[in-house]
Amino acid sequence: MSLLHQTRFFITVNDLRALPQEYRYVDGQPQVMPEVAFVGRSNAGKSTAVNVLCNQKRLAFASNTPGRTQHLNYFQVGKIDAPLGFLVDLPGYGYAAVPDAARKHWGQLLAGYVESREPLAGLVVIMDSRRPFTELDQQLLDWFAPTGKPVHILLTKADKLNKQEQNRTLADAHAFAV
Image (cartoon, rainbow, N blue to C red; front, side, top):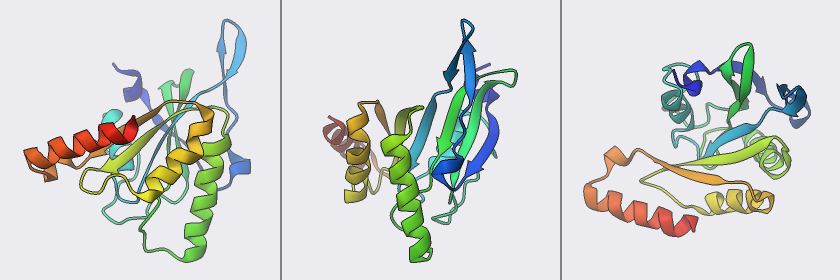
């Protein structure tokens, strides 16, 4: 069984001061558990990607309505008695029918998290294949770049494109990531 198949909900956080400080022990020494965050535009498929990777249909709440993920949702990876780290489903950026105050709060939460979260080991940037590479995507990568930590780009909804569009989007993604 894959380690990701042993993932379970841990906590929801709406304030950077409430972020968990969980430890695991390696050779008897405490280490902060690493986090891998899933981030992208509203309705790009972040929660669905978490569910697919973890082989669970309802681990992360997935909706057709943009803006449903409004907090940082932590999912603990590994056995209950020996967890290894976290997947973190972040609020989307860009379009969502929410008040400006909520959108501003999400922006501050997201920026603060990706710029300064020490246990954050890497980002998985989820992009809808039909709408990749916006200014907001570049801004997110600019916030995260100084950390030197890895970024992976996951293109979703490619089944909605024809083969030529898929190839062009993949080439664009490669050029954007390099």
